[in-house]
Amino acid sequence: MKTNTILLASRPQGEPTAAQFQFEIREVPAPKAGEVLLKTRYVSVDPYMRGRMSAAKSYVAPFEVGQPIAGGVVAEVVESQAESLPVGSIVVGNLPWQEYSVAPAASLNHVPADQAPISYFLGLLGMPGLTAYFGLLDICQPKPGETVVVSGAAGAVGMVVGQLAKIKGARVIGTAGSDEKVAYLKQLGFDEAINYKTADVAQALAAAAPNGVDCYFDNVGGVITDAVYDLLNKHARIALCGQISTYNNTEAPVGPRPEGKLLKTSTRLQGFIVSDYLPQWPAGVKQLTEWYGQGKLQFEETITEGFEQIPAAFLGLFKGDNTGKAIVKVA
Image 1: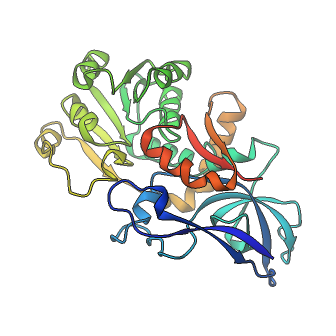
Image 2 (image 1 turned 90 degrees about the vertical axis):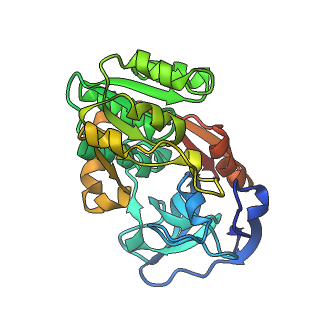
């Protein structure tokens, strides 16, 4: 059978554009023993994919020009040569941007569709939720009464970080890029939320954190991070998750040098990739699912419909178009 496919047409210089994506019809082979034929239901678009569009060395191999882009996908098994995944099973895996694909059953995880919307396994109960879970609870380890700051707080990771910090009894401050997102963070229980596009970030953070900052979950970098560093308390902890403010830069940004501030406050700064915790993922999903079932976690999705809209949804990440997880509904 044939399927629509999205390839990486060229490597971007600066911010990606629609020119980086090429649509093509490709042949899908019949599944062999141990494999399944999948129909794509939901496709995840994520900021980290910008790094994979470049040839620079990173923690994961770059996408190849002329080959399908791949990422998190929720799919339905429509033909099976694997006993573990009968027809009708819903699965999640790292799959190409195609309407149909073939994959080994062993590379896929079964989605318990009775526990949450299946798209949540690309968000709250998937990679973003686990990023929040391990980054906050293992690296930051917030204690009751401490102050936690989250940048990119209305994104798929940030909104979960803030709610987990509240579960742990912390006071939570989030930054986001619109008044609507700020209002949503307040609905989630954030104690303070700041629109970094309209506020003086340094002044607003200082006013929101009169007792300083004990934990910082950094999704953004840039001037927000510079401002947080001025507020760090003794033995503060920083989980360095992302730097989306710099992903499209063509030259390395020059900014304040933070080492002295980290030294004077004995702050621990740790970068991490969620795959570092791969053996612990099942336990993390179990706990997140439990808290979701108890009503302790809410989640927002920005869903775009149509396979052909995947590139536009991805490009929208860098304009702040999404609140929560950006997902494309394919089927």
